[in-house]
Picture 1 (tube, one colour):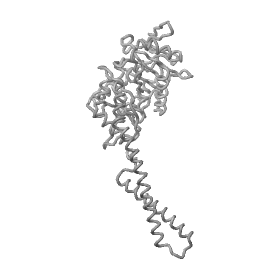
Picture 2 (cartoon, rainbow, N blue to C red; picture 1 turned 120 degrees about the vertical axis):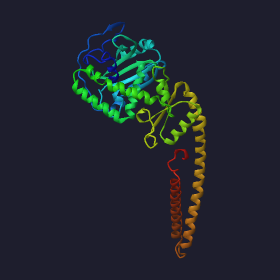
Picture 3 (spheres, rainbow, N blue to C red; picture 1 turned 45 degrees about the vertical axis):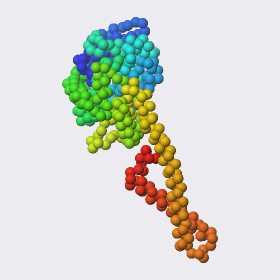
Length: 392
């Protein structure tokens, strides 16, 4: 992630050309042989391009791939971070992924061979400087032409890397800050076109300032549970949040949040793109679908609570509502049809033949039925019930 490489004054910056192995200070593992690649950084062109809507898609595809091929007991949350995770922000066309692992030693032993066999490049990388622990597992994925497409950072839950989500989410939620950062990236990429280290260092002041602001912003108590998540995601210790369910309607979202809050289970609401969804100005919630995440330890408890208190009762109520709606429709249909038939009997001349009279009776009854249903729907709409999924 180029934003935070600058924190180490270039020591963690990507170095060399696309054919080079990796950053200075990292150890590349080639089977049983360990090769130290601590060479002096060389010049590399800075390639900042306009935002590509495919970046989130590439992240989701790679996430699904990792979850399908890696040991499930080692993998926790997987996050998209860096500039490619911020809508409309220019970036280097490399998707950064932050993967939580339960044990880095086991990651080296089990995960690294799996990904290396698939063509990924693996480095045992220092968090700071050339050789300053804690180390973590870092992978480069390339396309068929040898260009980097993904950087995969695998860390345990207590690593400081999780603070990078604060920077990402703050830019997502504050478009003006993202716009300012995008302008700086374009400016510095022109000034330092052939010097990636100078480019990353030039952004340091902005990154440090905004990250500090984000820590304060997300550290405030929030009723939607975000503060608990971000405190847990910092160096003081992490809590793994896992998906509970997705909802598409704001009414259902409000009910689920209320039930979870009443039982003391914190939750994170994520909107489109699976970034944190917050209240917009005017108090209107963002558009769905919404995903609700809860701590992994509370997952089954939350499911049981929602099933017992929300979805099973609602399901039973919906069945009863459908039965009542069907019965009501039959009764009202009969009433309106009878009314149409009576009116036809009153106004149709007696000298008409039997077939004509019968046709008018049927047409009058059907017309009265249609008009009656239209009147009922109009009444429901005026009470705000027409599109309420809880009343269907």
